[in-house]
Image 1 (cartoon, one colour):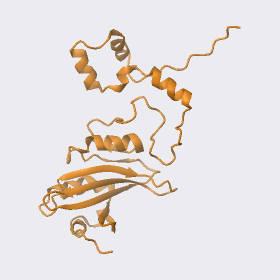
Image 2 (cartoon, rainbow, N blue to C red):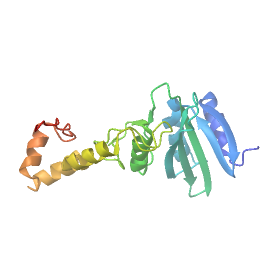
Image 3 (cartoon, helix red, strand yellow):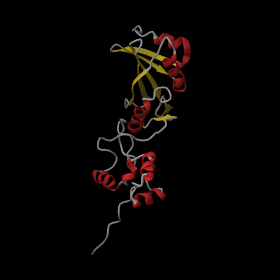
Image 4 (cartoon, rainbow, N blue to C red):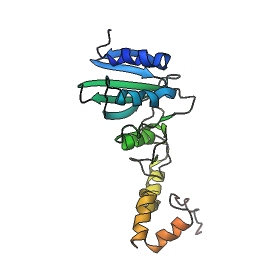
Length: 214
């Protein structure tokens, strides 16, 4: 199908082989970009006078669950001036590093969007200012719930999930910046200060050994 968005031809003219296949699906133009060139391409898409994609609508990912098929990071861009939308995809082979450059330096709103993709798919964004989980708690150790190989009930038993939730230290749910502010205001309890000093912020106690009362 003929591309309805002129940005695809402009991308090919500007970046050549760094631009992959393109398609139109349900009226939306989709174009693949090499992961190594992503930051350069996104900067151009935002700053070039003929593109002006100044609004990052969303960042997400797709795991098709097909052996050998890469995960795809998907960026939904919009030009407020031109009233045009463009979807950009980056394919990441599952047998390599699931990593791509962060676009936070280009679109500040990517901050929490990239953290969500990291949390749920396990894709790391190089250069992100605060690359940590955002939906699951920091001590969550079962993996990344939106990956197709993630079990419906999780990797741990319900009993172990409940135990970890009940025994997690409360400071694990706060960033170091938040904890430092609370400490400066004198709001950190003594036991929390002691755990932080010992480096036990994200530690979960192991189950106690069963006792034999007989």
